Length: 387
Ligand SMILES: Cc1cc2nc3c(=O)[nH]c(=O)nc-3n(C[C@H](O)[C@H](O)[C@H](O)COP(=O)(O)OP(=O)(O)OC[C@H]3O[C@@H](n4cnc5c(N)ncnc54)[C@H](O)[C@@H]3O)c2cc1C
Image (cartoon, rainbow, N blue to C red; front, side, top):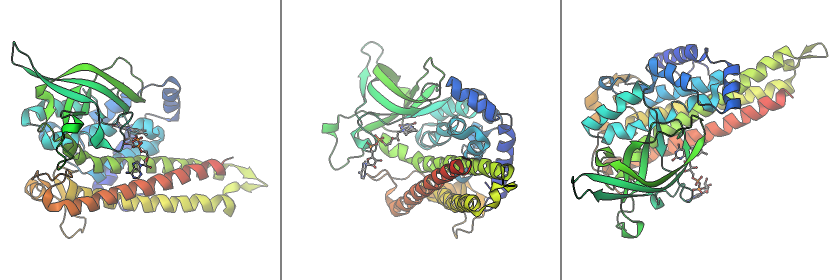
């Protein structure tokens, strides 16, 4: 990714992450792929350089940067050749912590976040179920509240199944969305209620990085690990979704840029009829066109991620100037004023700025779509150019 459009901080992030990733060459990733191994050593290196807390407050060990900066970080990891296997070692640890930061109690934040930021614990995000993907409000995994008759202690007993949970096998904990009110008893006027968010143990024996299925059979979660109020889980997880969309944009773009770089190198090195094949426009033009598409998607990504900062709570403390000039200032009061936790509407957004939030969601989704198309095409063309 070129430096165009990046802030000085983002260039710094890019350069320093590039340096870390140089220790993980193509051969490393080929071997990880062959052995189906989780790249725990990259996760460790990024944690010790402070990157897992990129969007977290300093008092918890974070660096208080924004979603756009985090997106540049994962783009750089992906572009280094690590691809999705590399960027996904940190992905959930960046976006799934945002709802925790915003809705967990002070003592929960102290218990959970420094461990994630320092890399001592890894987390994953447990929402999707085999029969319930996009239709999240129909989730079936249930968490039944039980009070121990002797001690009076409250626990939730979880039963059900999750699927497509990235890094579930490598994670120590899971941000889990489960049903605390049976679907048929959910108030029809408040369809987003009835699901609750937990931060539960999820340590499994395997170390492979894959998109796993997870089964819960009367699995007990302590009441202390309920995040926010019971029934508000769906509204709470929405606070991390735009950040996740932006991170995925970065990861896709990284793949596209990496593919083009390899194709260009090949096009320069491969000589036919006495000259490099890259001198032929049939090779040059599709690659150049793909680079244009990636750059355009990058601009949309940066724009979306910055709006995400202003309106959605993706970043904790940095906000753009209200005039959109791009200058950053770090003022907690401004953060609270713009995106502080207010009364949540039934769509999970603050009632007073739902239009702005809907616009940011559309922008982040648009960036994800445009980047996915551009990256796919870049990879396809890179492949075609070298065969
Ligand atoms: C690589 C990967 C990693 C993932 N990681 C995680 C993770 O870590 N945690 C997690 O919880 N989930 C994860 N997921 C799951 C992902 O979020 C779901 O795949 C997603 O929510 C879609 O659910 P589904 O696949 O069941 O699609 P479905 O809900 O079955 O939808 C399939 C398709 O139907 C169409 N469709 C559905 N509803 C509508 C509608 N109302 N209007 C128009 N079209 C519609 C769309 O084209 C949609 O793409 C991951 C998925 C993948 C592929």
